Image (cartoon, rainbow, N blue to C red; front, side, top):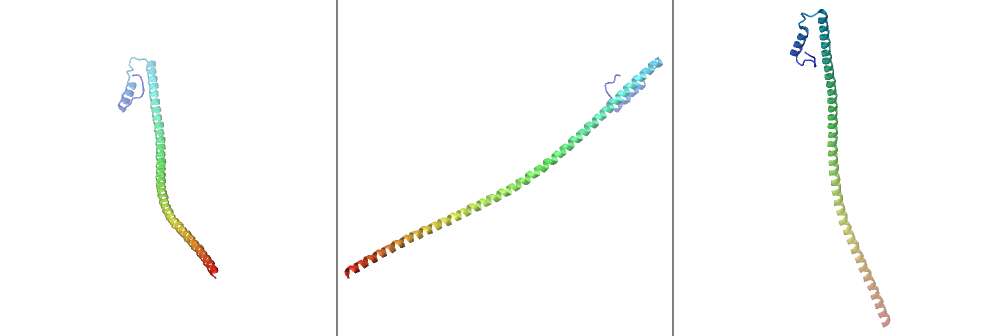
Length: 157
């Protein structure tokens, strides 16, 4: 049998090694038997090296997968942290937005109250101005009447 790679199951291994060792050496010269044994030794060494290389590759792949898994775990951990931070930020932002909205509503209410108070004060000032003008007009009429009265009295006297 030509070696194309190591057998894949324990039964194939047993059969493979039995075939190599149990070859019919009858009728062969000692040199031929030696040469066949050396070829078998070389084949077994190649198979063993192939198996060792495969185990090493599997170990490297396993280590690589472990590193990848570690990176994935780290990434998941970081993602969870970022997600938690985003959630906390969203909660804070919501609270702040609620507070700002409440303050804005209070501000609008205060502005409305101040506008009403200002309108009331403006009306009072207008009324006071109007009253002052009326009193001034009354005072002027009174003075005119008194002057006319004095003039009439001085003309009659």
